[in-house]
Image (cartoon, rainbow, N blue to C red):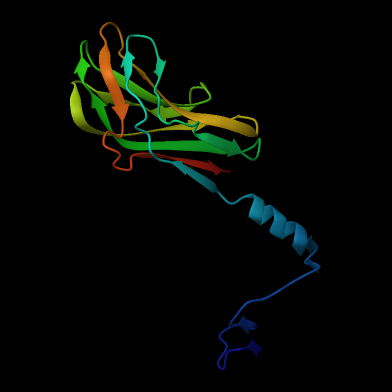
Length: 175
C-alpha cells in the first residue's frame, strides 16, 4: 500500500505527515507524545557579562557578570544541567601561580567540571570551561562564575567579556 508515493519500497510507504490518535500496539499515543516532548533538551543563554571588575584573593569570589541575575529555570528533578562558558577575560595584575575560574549554580559547585585558568595577567585572554550538575531539584538557579587565586597571591580588575564582544554562557537541561 502506498499513500502519496507511486512506487512503494515497503508494505506501507507514506510520503507526508501522519496524525495518529488513540492506541497503537497497546500504547496511548497522546501519552507517548507528552513523554517525547518532555524529554527534549532545553537551552538558555546569557550575554553581556562585562558588568564590573572584581579583585580576587585566595578564597573563591563570585564575579559580577551582569546588572541583572542570570537566572536559569530547571524544569525537572531528574535532569542534568550542563553550563558552558566561552569568553574573553581580562586580568590587570596577577601575583602567584595563576587564577582559576569555575561555573556554579546559585553557589553550588558542579558534579563534573573543567575549570578555566590563566597563569599571567592579560587584557585579551580567551577561556572556555564548563560544569555538569546532577541531582538538583527543579527550580530557579543563578548561573555564576567564581574565581580564585590558589595558594597565595591576588588578581586585580578581573573582568569577563572586556569590550563586550559577545562572550557568553549557554545552559542545557537534558535527560
